[in-house]
Length: 56
Image (tube, rainbow, N blue to C red; front, side, top):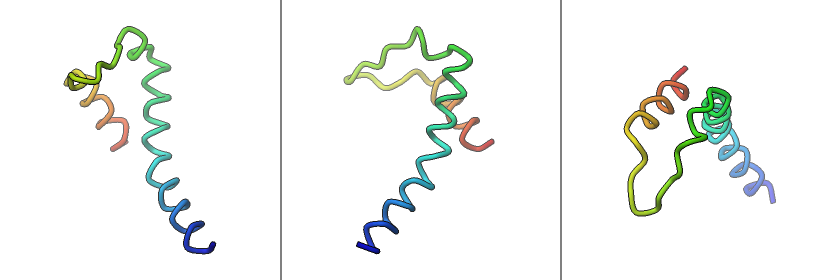
């Protein structure tokens, strides 16, 4: 039980900045016109914005 809680905590710590970054990008309305396609990678601009936000 303790090991599972620690694992969940580690995942939450790593996931929080990413989720906050996407929330910030959504507030810019950048993602409203982009529709992810499973067979195609995301546009390079989206990757750059995501990287900048995560590193902020």
